[in-house]
Length: 150
Image: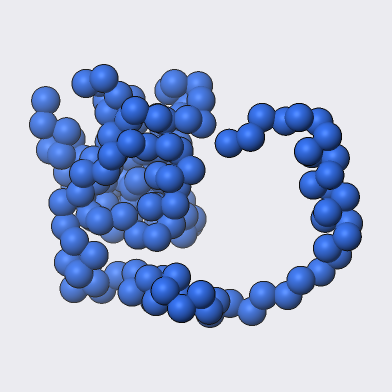
């Protein structure tokens, strides 16, 4: 099976109904597609519903775990910083992409601002610390519960 063709089919399905940008993805484990998704930013009014994130959510539901170690993500474009972080949090082993970050910029997506913020460490959003001691108490209780780390 050509997994990139499956990712492309997801992307085409999404753009043809106006769900969002031309970004589709599938996640494969041991030769089987376990997750599918396409960009649904416009359909869901959710700026985080990128194709890769949708596929990760679908795969995690499918396998009943937040851990996708050993899985490969096929996506129609180089993952934006948010999607790359989501792939890292999911423990994906490999990413295969079609278009480059430059190709994405050429059709009007603003990923460059996010790459720049990551490089400089400066946030374009105002950040204010508040109630640190209260939040540290919360963290201490979490640590004491021996909750599963991910």
